Length: 153
Image (cartoon, rainbow, N blue to C red):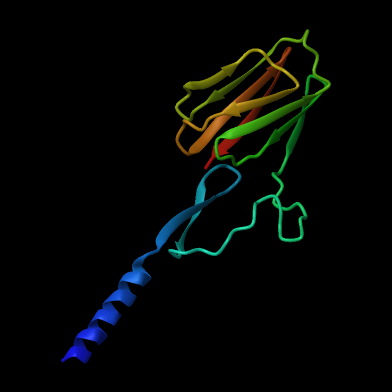
């Protein structure tokens, strides 16, 4: 009788140990921002150690953010990372402080969620407080305008 109780107890503990995991849902989007795939990932309770996103075990750089570039009013714009977790970096090469410009970020309902009028060579746009989804960023320098689709994960 004690053996049966011991076996049941061991099986119960094993089943509880196997349930100590989480499920992460990962979405993939096409270039237009439409969700095209949903994937479920099972994460064990004691995951293995994770190497940093920017360095592998050899110390080499990897997973660098993809930089998107455009020219606007004879200035080179660099925008990264997109998709973003909430912080977007914008760099303007050859920026002149005498040129007026602005950056506005709109949600898909057309509401302005960020409005920046003091431009500089390097700026950070923080949308971490906004929900995941698609946003439109409009950059105006002088009389020229550029529109960008930003995806927040």
